[in-house]
Structure formats: C-alpha cells, structure tokens
Length: 222
Image (cartoon, rainbow, N blue to C red; front, side):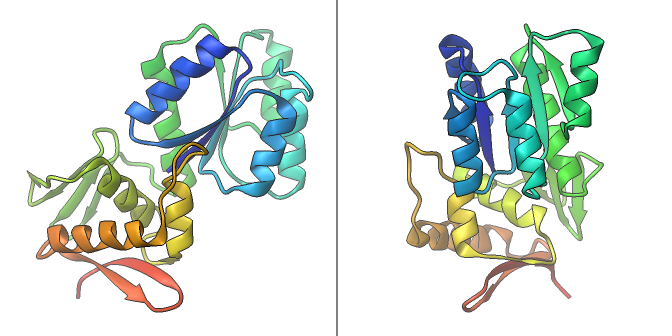
C-alpha cells in the first residue's frame, strides 16, 4: 500500500518515512502543501499523513481541496496544534483521525493500520477465507494456522488484493501502490510477485485469477 506523508520538518519527516517503510508500506514524502496537492492529483494513495503548518499551502487547504475533488483516501492529521478548535476544524474538513505531536511511532503506525482497515471495510484485524488467514497487524498470512513464508513485496501485493477481494485490481494499480518516488516496480515485476503468490497459496482455499486486459482477482476457491 502507498502512503503520502506531508511534513515540512526534515528530521521528523525522515523518521516517519523510514518507520512507514519498515512497516512494509511504500511512501512518498511531500515537504510543502503545494507539492502535496500535485502528488494527490498525479498518483493514487491508500492514505495520507498530513501536517497543518506547511509552507506554500496550509494543510487544511490541501485537505479541503482534496475532498472537493472527490478524493476518498483516509487522512490522519499529524500536528502540534492541540486546541479543541483545531481538532474540530480538521475533522470537519474531512480528516479521519487527528494525532498530536510529539507521538510514538508505534502509535502512529497502529492508527495508520486502523485507517487502512476501515477504508477497505475490514473491522477485524483477522481475515479468514476458508483455510486461509491473514493477520493485518502482524502482516502474516497462514493456512490452517501455519504461517506462510512471504517476502515483503509478496505481502504488499497480497494486502492490495485482499483490500479488493472479489473485485478486479489492475496490474498498473498494483505497481503504482508498490512504489515511491525514489523506486520503481514494473509490470513484469508484478507478474513475478503474482506467480510466486499463486504457488504459495495453492491448497489454501483462495486463488488469484488473471482476467486478461483487466487485472487480477483474489477469490475463495469453490
């Protein structure tokens, strides 16, 4: 999954970006409001972490403009502004969560995972499809309780497909959500990850179908 981090403090931004990457997510880091708006128009994100006091464009304006354009991605405001009025304005502008600085990175990541679960209509941290299970906190797939050995990229692809279970996910959408600005994943790499996942999911009760010209579909086996 791909996260947009909007933070102008270089030290904090670097720490949060590295924590998000270590958690297994792709991340783009915008240092000001104008750059964040350009990123939101150009790329698809699964969530945004948004500071308020930004150069060039205020964070609340970035959020309001995104919602006016119809953007539905979950947004967590991360700011030092602790007045009740600021929280109300942020939530009324379309934020889904509000986290005060300073914060623990573990709490930020836990809240981010919760945002992503809700965005995909998953209230429970455990997903079960037949013999297959997935723990969204530990990011661990299993069959009959036995963990599957998956690479970080394979877990990312699996999470994307699980978030669209029963619906087709385009190959290009998977590639886009696996990459940040400073890295690239091509269509051929996506095909490799899908092939590996198929082999590891054999006999699990779920399967990945290829719909030519459309993309991939994760579904329970009949």
